[in-house]
Every structure is written in C-alpha cells, then in structure tokens.
Image (tube, rainbow, N blue to C red; front, side, top):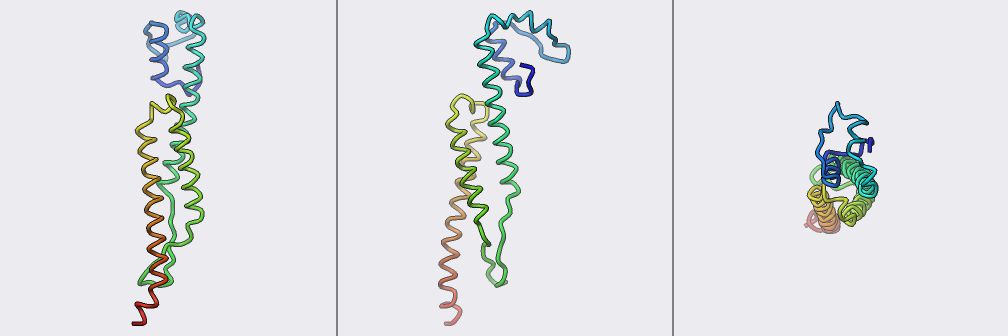
Length: 154
C-alpha cells in the first residue's frame, strides 16, 4: 500500500470499502492506517493494491508509446529533389505493429483500463491512422515510381 502505484482513486476505493473517510497527506501515518482496520478487509485491500500495480504498468506502457510516437522519425530519399520519396519504413512498421498489439492487449484488460480508456482509445485510433496513411502512401509511391518514367519521357 505504500507503493508508488497507489493513486488517489485507489485511496478513494479504500474509503469506499472501509466506509471511513480520511485525509492521505503528509500527516498520514501508520497509526491512521491501523485505525482504518484494513485487516478486516484484507481481500478487498489486496485487490485494490493489485489493481494499482496493473494500472501503473498500463500507464507506463502508454506513456512510452506516446513518447516514442511523438518523436518517431520518418526518413525521405531526396535523390530526386522534385519528388522526395519515403525512405525505409522497416523499423517504423515493426514498431507500429508491436505498439498496435500492445494497445489491443491494453484494451483487453477490462476494468484495469477504465481510468485511462479515453487515452487508450485515442492512441489506438492514432496508430490505426498512421498505419492507414503509411499503407496508402507506400502504394501511391510504388505506383508513381512505376509510372514516373512513362510520364517523364512523353
């Protein structure tokens, strides 16, 4: 319970379970904890602490995905200055597939993502949009590369 994973929402759950209110601040001490008689609610308390740990893991993964994709570089082949082309997307696609799977895994966590479901849904949508955009872009680029000589020679 002293872990860094316990957020205010978890302490609120503890208040609900124990039917007691308390202020968890710098003055909160072991004596206050004992007065809550949490031992009488051991299963519920254990479940809340377990939930906080699982939510913290989800939070950490979500933060990592947001950080990576906010800085994800895409390279261009500028050998033809009139028409720069996308560079190698191998690493980007690999990362995209991995993170998309990670987001699907988070979505399947049920109640453990309730606290951040809007963010999970938002980033799942963003990753789908990136996938769709890159897919269309690479198809258009492949067609252009195949047709460019025909247009340039006529």
